[in-house]
Structures are given as C-alpha cells and as structure tokens.
Image (cartoon, rainbow, N blue to C red; front, side, top):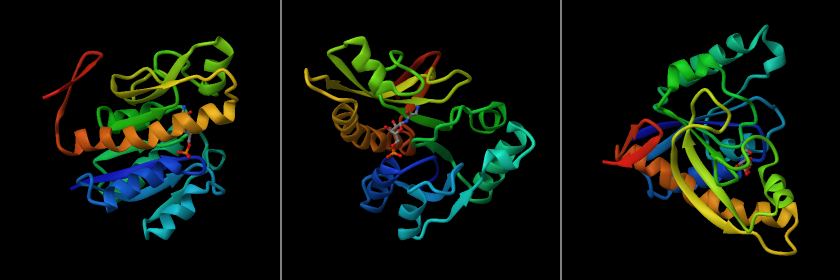
Length: 200
Ligand code: GAR
C-alpha cells in the first residue's frame, strides 16, 4: 500500500477523486495526510470527513521558502509518505521539497502541457483559440509544469465555452486521470527515462 501525501490550496475536488479511488479499492494507495498552505482551503474539510489527518502551513509564518518547505517535509515524513500528490497546490515547489521527493512527487495541470503552463491555463487556452486542450499529470521537476508526463487527456474547446464551462469539462478529465497516474506508480509500473515516462 502506497502512502499518499496530498498538497492543496483550495476546494480539493482532485483530492476527493483520489480519496474516492483509494477508498473504493481502485488503487492500492491511501491518503495519509493532507497539507494546505491556506487555512480556508475547502479540501481540508473533505479530508476531515474521511478522518484523514490535515496540516496547515502558511508561508508568511516562515522566514523563507526553505524553512516553510522543511516543515512540509517533516510532516510528510511523520506520515511515512511515499508519493506526494500536488492537487491544486498553487505554489511553485522549491529545492527543499524537490530534494526530498524528486521522482516521488506528481502534479495535475489543467492543460495539455507543454502548452499553457502556469496560472489560468484554461483562460490561456481560450484566449489562444486552440480547439483542443486538456489535462496532464506529470512528475515535478525544477521548472514550472515542466516535468516528465505520465498521463494526458484531451478535451475539445467548444465555440461558446467560457472559462467556467471549459474548466468544468477539463476537471472531469482531471478526476479521471489523476487516480490512473497514481495507480501506475502504486503498482510500480513506471520508469522515467529522460523526459519520457515509460510503462515497464
Ligand atoms: C485544478 O483544475 C488543477 O488542475 C489546478 O487547480 C485546480 C484545483 O482544483 N491546478 C493548477 O492550475 C496548478 N498549476 P481542485 O482544488 O478542485 O482539485
């Protein structure tokens, strides 16, 4: 059983999809801790409903990013986390978290990377006029949304889409592919070769 630590900043619908997949026996993993940088994140309530321990670390309460991330690392280690899942965690991962969890930290992003990395990916896609966008789960590396890609799902952009309607359609795919990526890792099915993630 793979122990998951989920990092969030907001409502936590991806967290919910992960919890449901674990509790429903679809993946041999368990969410053992949920950590947020924002005490108001809705995902914290979701975790509590499932009796999952939570922790909140607010970056402003620490003297610098390294000290902040060291606290997160301590919490993850306390719960013996084997895989860190960023699920709507809206902060750039720094060297401390990376050093401890490189190759064992994944992220979900609401676009077909490498297109539209960073903030407001759905709006970026609409503004650019693409007809297809989607969602990506990838390993986290030093860059912003640049790590090796594990799973992607394409989503059509409709003519009268708004940021809200497009985000909602992408979100459904996020909830589908995030558990799949975790399942691959929990079953030890992946190898990373340079930029490529291959099935063993
Ligand atoms: C999701 O759409 C996720 O892909 C996105 O934030 C949303 C969080 O929703 N993440 C990023 O944009 C990261 N760059 P959730 O809190 O309901 O899972």
